Image (cartoon, rainbow over all chains, first blue to last red; front, side):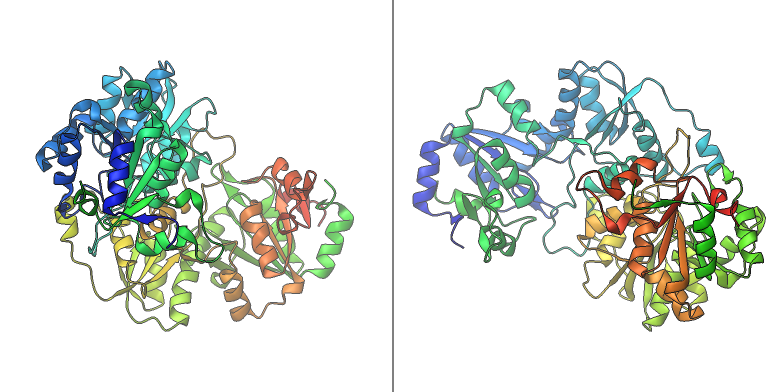
Length: 303
Length: 303
């Protein structure tokens, strides 16, 4: 492994001298399906005590910013509302910023996606169970709301055939905007037998049925960083993005032009890192973090 | 349009002289969401009266062979059970042929996929509603059946978060076989406002969550043709496959080494055909039907 560097005391010192803004992915970095990842709270607290700005940047669309704030506090991570950028918030702000005045058909949780849309003053409907009903003939006779000019798909544990049908049908109108929060495959959960499906499992079937690609809010797209830059006036050259997924977090950092650290406590494995750094001609500079660590506390112990 | 030829009396004559086995896709060729496509019954009857063998080869996994037989009869198409090859049947036969003795976790309808598995003597569970229940902690505690060694995903209008979770979790075991009937995007329904999602909307989220590719039974894969050849001893050089989808039916025909006819009464449009035949350097021989017609009756009128 020649390109990405393991964290050492010297490298941490250099990072602390040149980075003011620390962006963190959450699931797989700070916590996972088993709870808080050991040592991560202490690391964040040390950074804060040095006066560093800490931002939580998450693709998870099952929570609003307020939910995330509560989750951070509950786990012991220091946070204010403005430190949190999540895809539910990003989707609502995207629509607000383009002056969207119509209705949204929402596949996603009311308490996360819905709350953020409401806070941005945007009308929507769709959350909650929508179980199978009727037959082909009745489906063809379904009435679509002509005011719907956007379909937003986020994490929706009530995904159903009716919802995919409705979302794809609204999207037959080429003027109907299609927003997906993110395309994450599953939630990080080391050493578990159960796979917890991610938002990609809701976004992809709609994209397939509609034969359209969504505008994506989540990493690796840059929307959330653009939002942060706009509101908090951040200098990308003094940022470090830390995440557990090469294809999501590290590619996001590259797309945003910021440095990156990979932790191996979540989605991506050491093998993924070796592949990115180059097995023969397979090297992919877009997937190479600047530094890596087994987990965040390996970085924290040198602070 | 230079490569694929419009049906003419001379071409139909030549086809009738050189083809004994006529394979037909159903949705979009014989019928669609609006009912029987005008003139298709008459065309099939003419072929039968000339002593031609007619096979119905469909990706639709929401019906068993028996269901298809009834649907054919109801619409007026002459058919016997052995004339029908569908993906539910193909999936069951695939498992039977490899001597599969364990249990299947099935995402699909009991009355189609389930019936075919049962007829092939294969144990399964899974069909029917499986609505959202519990939370992350409870999901992680879920018990998987250790006898499940195959996940089959077909058309499942009861698609749910729990089902995707279970299917993907069984597939964590690399020895667990993953079969998808097909990856069709939607059902053909000309001039309708509503998009009817296809089996791809069930297969893809499972593939994504499990990070695995399924073995596909449906067109454009050759499994259904292999099955037909094996059982009915068909000569590929004397076959014509007729379908409405370039990416499904025409590519299937090419993969099977048989001639093909595209009808424009379903999924693929004249623009798709022009693209396949070559706009500049875009030509794709794998997507070029030998002949094409607006609809099947345009072929039938020359018989």
